[in-house]
Amino acid sequence: MLTLNVKGQLMTTGRPLVMGIINRTPDSFYSGSRVTDDEQLLQQAEKMIGEGADILDIGGQSTRPHAEWLGEEEELRRVVGAIAGLHRRWPETLLSVDTWYARVAREAVAAGASIVNDISGGTLDSEMLPTVGRLRVPYICMHMKGTPATMNKEAIYEDVVMEVLDFFIERIEACRLAGIHDVILDPGFGFAKTAAHNFRILHHLSLFRLTGKPILLGVSRKSSIYRTLGVTPEEALNGTTVLHTIGLLNGANILRVHDVKEAKEAILLCSK
Image (cartoon, rainbow, N blue to C red; front, side, top):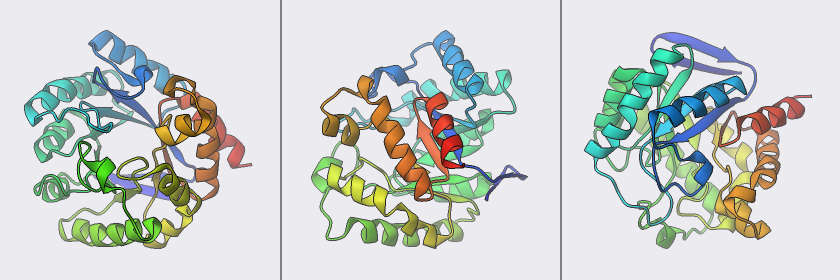
């Protein structure tokens, strides 16, 4: 059972949720997720909602390795108007803002977002956790070492599962002290982790349930899949579905995906 307090309203579900990825970027690693104009934004959102997406995650900054780091002004320009437009068109659909900037989070929630998704777990902007605490929205806390520009050099662990778990324990307490009541944990597949690290985390995903927090799985079309299979991100849907299945069987509560229909089918079949 997953229960979230979204701006004072309780959302309860007994099944895993699907979060559709919409990137207002020209350079995200998967070409199918790039949305560069308002018409394309609405078309992508309509398709995902029609296929059963529970949440749409709107981001304005590519977080692939070595991606250009945008300032908050450019990120605001890319995401806040998009979120406002989506909220007007589909007011009942949950919207998430993918950002590590507190100001972007604040303005996105004012525009209609109901969830803050932070790849840094509050480590890149010291105002993020207090801001989310005041906003009273769920917070997705992801594990990453370094930044997207440096994280490949940071993929060094003695025990990746236990080190990510320790990070979450510390961050959950930091969130509590900041007044954040609903924390969702994302192990950060591909962020300062090798393919071997990612597969180890996936197979031990259930350990993170010891925290009592929901788990988000973000493996869609990532390099651990397409490099292992010797294909491109555009050819990695089948591999993505396989890893979604493993994740669901190990307790994932939310799938963050490029392909909503296939993720919904995986959830349905895993529930039987």
